Image 1: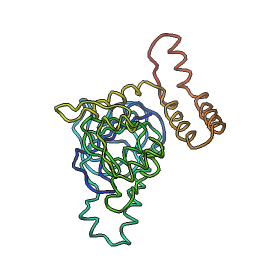
Image 2: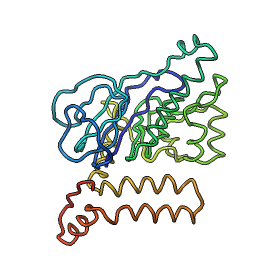
Image 3: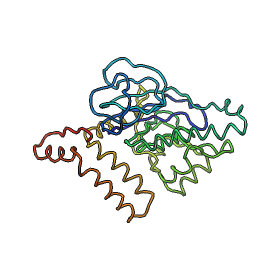
Image 4: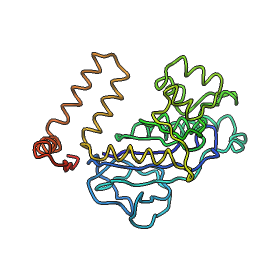
Length: 288
């Protein structure tokens, strides 16, 4: 199982004036066969890494290797790793030069990238330490959990440009904070700081910014480390059960939960968890 931590990054509106995007993986699971990321830590396989520039170990480890990739890759075990990506969104000046026929496919690609993040079979955490406007917030909304510094700024501001959010914002924001409030924020193109975002339920944690400017990222790392010891398969199917269950009625949702629970019964991890509890020791999960 992996937990991904991503800071809000450029998106549908263009480049943001904030730091780069970050992603951390914690925990492990055998999800699929695949390639090995450079400089990995030891362990079982985890899910895909996406559009990465500069894989950098969060603590120690080999020097980073830089380069961009959209390939789906796995590792034998990814425990804690830090992905940092420089701003590479669509510049509004560039957007102004696009013809009408070019804009649609361009936004469709952005939407596809954000959907891929939303569909990762691992927990994801968005850490917002700077600006998350337009596509930046849409990226954060695609994550399971969002944390932000109190000084961060976020909003879906597309209506100021006579367009609407095109990376899933009109669908994910209402699901996160409710329809009426989401309409208010989109109609007004209002920008919230961290405290305001916490008050409306857009983020789970708000922190005072530190001198390094990475308070939210450090909190996201702490959360990822909390996820790390849990059963990898259980984490994956728990996310599946929650995501699918929230889109249906309660009776159907309970049936989805039952089906997901059934996937954990034959796993070696379940037996290891019971044995570790009996022996009063930390479990040694292998993601199988």
